[in-house]
Image (cartoon, rainbow, N blue to C red):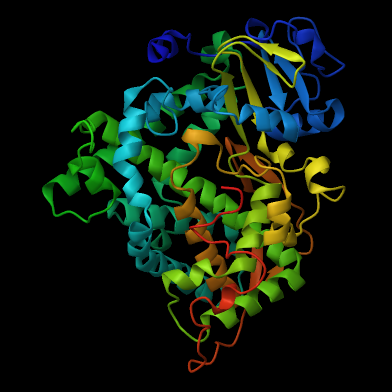
Length: 508
């Protein structure tokens, strides 16, 4: 019965006045203009950062209107904790996420809650992110990381600064494509990004633009962009179809693609359809590399600007890994301070910067704001992570010690949400965290990172976030003596609290 109600709920954009009976209680920007709404001073290219600015001015819940579309935004920790309650709220597929459905369909990220393929795919693919599976991916992650360091060695020897976002995108695309689908895009052998990356960026940027352009005007205002988006989607589909066809004609790798092609649901015996397999592969290739590349890029930016933090993290790497060329899976999980650097970077700039929640039934948010069944709000993760009541008056500052074990235990639940929340949180979060921690450890041990003195952080928005124009200068460090032994398993974890690794992510 509940599933029938969910399936009957209207799809597409639902403006806030349809679900919030007392919308007048929620503040909005002061210069609202009839017919067009809160568009004065707004930027089509940076809607998230605009909303962050309004959030600071208007408080933990506010609303914005663009033409006929009104959205309620939430960032206060208490309200966000309520929205994380799975008994009252569920994932809402709206805004940019729904705009990706023409290419990703009912993939894990874009499926509506009532669509059966979400649960089927989740149950079939979840073992692909088990500890045993992760250990199997680890050597391939190392292989791809070595291709990155070979490239950076050449750039450093030539006296050139490295393109951090570009190279992190190459790294993470190759990692997910090799570990998940046995495919090599040869990204590091190309002078320009692989066409798959261009098409992926195109679809994400187009989906972002649809958020701020009125739907009736989109065919007129975005005519050229719509044609390009159709071409981008066709290229993504062709690329994935070729990967799947190659696997069907050849041997299996025991990876995510094999699970999609060969594994039946353990309870029902049902299998994924060919169309859904294509959608899942596209979902993993996009979501599995775009967000991780952003997280690594922001972390490297902060490490270059905070040499004392980099030195502390580097000392940990050398202590835990010793002189080994290829650290083992367990050794990555023991890089506690490196992981804190990554978490603090994700706090300040969560690369998936917001998530939407909808009411399962009529309810009242914060004891003040009535919501009808199906009403939804957008949680601004990037502002939730800056709530001064949780993170302190210095919440805008970079400080990895916010994630030491004692501080994590002292914080309320649901205040750190870089991977979403609830049953629909990112299935690959431990994969991403292991990959990113491994790569940061390898780069810190090998290089000193020098920023461009004139660079100021600019954040590019294409549904996900990425530092724009970030380039770093490298200085090779002398290698750790080969005979130096790593700390034995467990010895690095004797500090206060458990090690922060794949089995124990902070506030997971």
